[in-house]
Amino acid sequence: GKGDFKDLRTFNYTIIYMTKRVSIINFKGGVGKTTLALHLAAGLSSFYEKRILLVDVDHQSSLSLVCLGGKRWEQIVNNNKTIDEIFKHFTNHGAPLPGKEIIFKAPISNYPNLDIVPSTLHLDETELDLTSTTYGNAIESEWNKRTLICEWIEKNNIDDDYDYIIFDCPPATKLVTQNAIAASHGYIIPVIPDAVSTRGIPHLINQVFTRIDTKFSGLSQFLISKGNTISSAYVPSTKLVGIVVTKIKTHGMAYSGYTNDHTQHLN
Image (cartoon, rainbow, N blue to C red; front, side, top):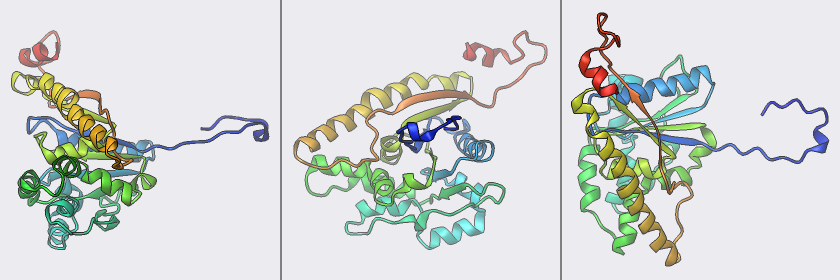
């Protein structure tokens, strides 16, 4: 902090900096997940001078393309320097866990404190490989395939380098997204205030709290009881940070200022 202490010799204190990890998720596509992830990261980096790591876990790779540009992104994919290498550590048994070489520094010149781990279109196939691959003990295998990002963060001391890690997730809560949730302290849901986009929110919140987190808890408790070590980057309970309204349609003549459909669903 910036407290004005007259004599620091009278104080014994410890300052603990903890990286905050946040997932941007929604079942629905086209609601602004990637846009929110990028602007949240840029805002924290620029206005608050925070060190930010964007992690693109969406196979569509839109965030990676926006940050890196098409040609550079293609070169990175061809050189196997994407998030996919973390998951290959499990699907290609014996493949080494990548290091910090998959992090690309300051891809946007105006934001020197903003880095990115890019994605690849191949991540869609990797999702299927994760589902079908099992090694050794079934429970341990289920845990390992869901905590690969946690393992990468811990083994490479990624938290030491950043104030925030922001995951841009695909429109699904399958294994790749569950990896992001396992490592996240909180999640944010972007939503368009219409019938199609809002109806899935209660289900999504229920899915994270009562199914995904509960499954993680059961797996981790079993492994701990058997003497296994759980990654320090694993977060037992991922909290809802907020719901962000996106793409709202205005209507000048309406009392609320918005279209009737959006006014109804805002309520």
